[in-house]
Image 1 (cartoon, helix red, strand yellow):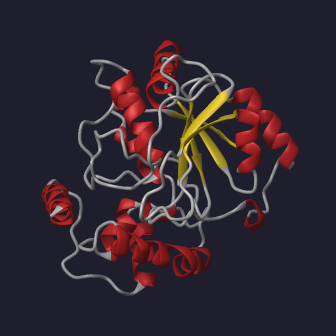
Image 2: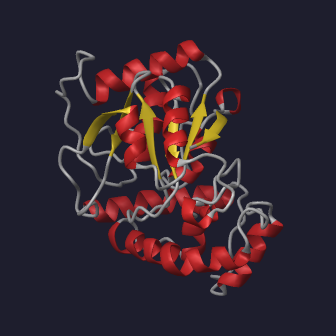
Length: 286
C-alpha cells in the first residue's frame, strides 16, 4: 500500500511539473548522443566544461546504473529522460560543473590535495552548503552536507544497503576530517548572503538533527532512506537534510520553495530549491 501511495505522489508531482512548462518528452529519447546535444542547446551543459566524449562515458558508467537503481528501489514510473532532467544531466545547475568528473580526470588543478584541505578549512563557515561531486551509488548523482557550526559538518552519510534503509545514519565530523574523507572528489561550497541567518540555520540543524543540547554528544538518531516525503525528518537523506535545515530553520522567511517537482532532491539541483531572494552563492571548489 505504501509503495502505491508513493507512486501516486510522484505521478501527481511529475504531472504538475510537465504542465507547469518544463519540456515534456513526446516519446522517450533513447539516443544518448541526442540527449547530450539537446542539453547543450538548452544551455544546461557547457561542452567546454563537459565534452561530449566525457559525458557519454559517464552516462554509460554511472548515470544509467544509477537510474536503474532509482527505478528499481525508489520509483519505477520515472523515465530515463525524466531522471536525467531531475539530476540536471550530471552538472551543477548554476556553475555547470560536472558532478561525475573526479580530480584525476581534470587537468586544471590549481592546488594540491593538502592545499585544498587547508583552504576548505579556512573558508567553510556555519550554515554553508557542501556539495560533493563523484559517483555515490544511491540512485541520484552527487552528495550533500551542511556546516552545523564553524568547525563541524553534519550529513546523512548513506552507504551500503541504502536502498533498504540504514539505521542511525546522521553523522557529525570535524570539517578537517570530513574534507579528508572526500578529498578525492570535488567539494563545492555554497553560502547564503545573510550570515546571521546562516548561523541560525546551523544552530537549528545541529539541535534538531544531531544533539538536542547542541553538544558533541549525539542524542538524535535518524535513519537513511531516499523517499518522496520532503517534510518528514525521519528517514532522511543527504540533500533532503540540507533542504529541511533551511526550510525549517529559517522560520517564516520564504527562503525555500515549498514544493519540489519530483519530490526527491538530487544534490545537483539543491541551489534551485531556494527562492530567488535567498539563492546561495557559489564560493569555491576544493
